[in-house]
Length: 69
Image (cartoon, rainbow, N blue to C red):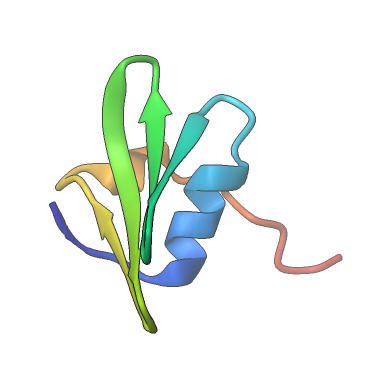
């Protein structure tokens, strides 16, 4: 997995075709995003650090956002 931007992670999380789950253990929180049974992205939050990760081909799971609303 490689680092991705927060906006890309949010795009994946808000896609109705994807499922996500949250795990918390003390100060550590992990949010995992799945497409079917394939893990495509995850967010790691430890204390004040937040990092977003995606698989190498995560771009094919992104949805197009309307620029003009």
